[in-house]
Image (cartoon, rainbow, N blue to C red; front, side, top):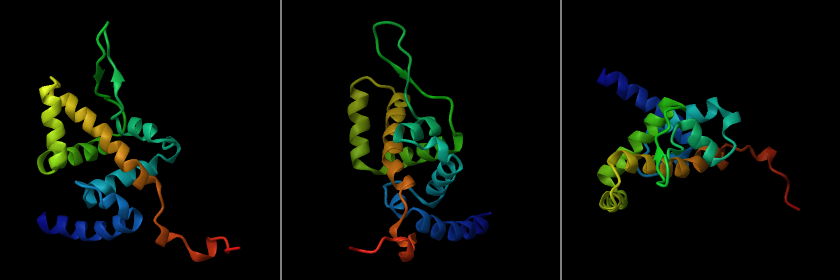
Length: 151
């Protein structure tokens, strides 16, 4: 199985690099998670109107769950579970290895948030961050004949 995984990673890496090189430059985003996010985004182009629409697609948009005077949000149980899993993986990598994320987690823990709520916030942040690289086309893929001549 390890050799098959290595072979598929070798095939997937260049494809993702060609489709969205800026996505791979983000901290914690590898070929597998980037490939999943690309697949989820390209399978639903009609749902990718905005960054918030992508967050709903991935199931990371906060849903108000306030019973009274308190303001709480809950996890979204809908959306593309594979895209949500990819965002979850990115968040886990950042929580482990990114100093800024670790500082954020520490601060929010002191504020009284649970780990589940902190991860919900981080997933929403990551969804916001990966939206632009998902929806932009790399310039090297645009043929020169499609560009308007300079005036």
